[in-house]
Image 1 (cartoon, helix red, strand yellow):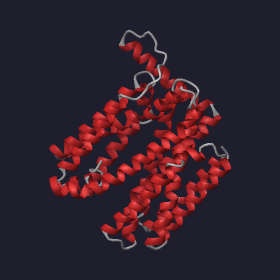
Image 2 (cartoon, helix red, strand yellow):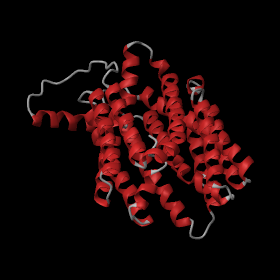
Image 3 (spheres, one colour):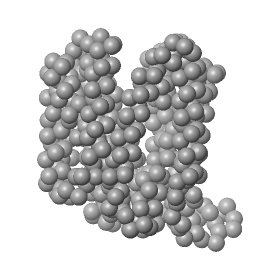
Image 4 (cartoon, helix red, strand yellow):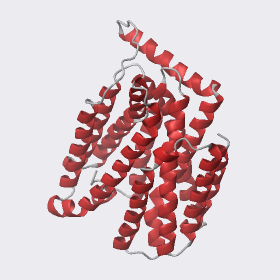
Length: 367
């Protein structure tokens, strides 16, 4: 998605203030938050492949609308479409993949497969970021926007080719029957999380870790605070991206490690990120890159633990509960940084966020 590093500039160039742009980001977050769990339940009663295809189509529509018909209300509509698409895809791919592997007696390959998939995602993000500059030079915002829309649409179409394990379907004949099945699945998924201690802890760790990692939005500002130029900032972020790409591919190798080892790795990663935020640019971002790569690797591992603990048919629903929690934690992180920056410098705030990560490390060590 080469539009990712550019869309905030697109909004600003069409007259939106920082406050208005923040409101658009909030609109996306709220849309995703509201639909996260209900869409997960829907993915448990309908075709997950079609859900993923719809997710890609909605994202493609959002990006295309932004660059072809730029304006405040179109930007808002795009964020709603993107938020709905994000909710439809959240937990759906994970559930589809795990069930397919389980059907082939290969569930133990889940962490390896998803680690490689996320590594590929991070690598392609680096490529898209590198392509953003030449694309915008050639075709303004329209060209990177349409390239991103085409990529999202292609991903959705590709999802239709994925193998999907057959699931038991009720003999529903009316929309009321479908609604009743959706409600029963939603209720069962929430009940699974509340009554199963191991699953509850796995969901909690996943939500906390994912949500706390939302402060990666501030890494460019952290580099700038250290005096980095825009070009140097880009290079620093590329270094972080390379470390993520390499380390997350190793997730399968540590997926079956015991809790104490995983907790120790998370603690070391938290210390590396926190310390790196306070160091000069070069050594600081080297430490952040290492720590962030380990965090991404562990994120795949804890998400695997969630999938391993689900025993019922509401797999996507349970995964979406973790997604809902992570969205809530992420909003809290953004609020803390936004409010705290009035009194405290950004490096100190980022370093302080290592403290709750240490708390998550304790939870993970006990799992």
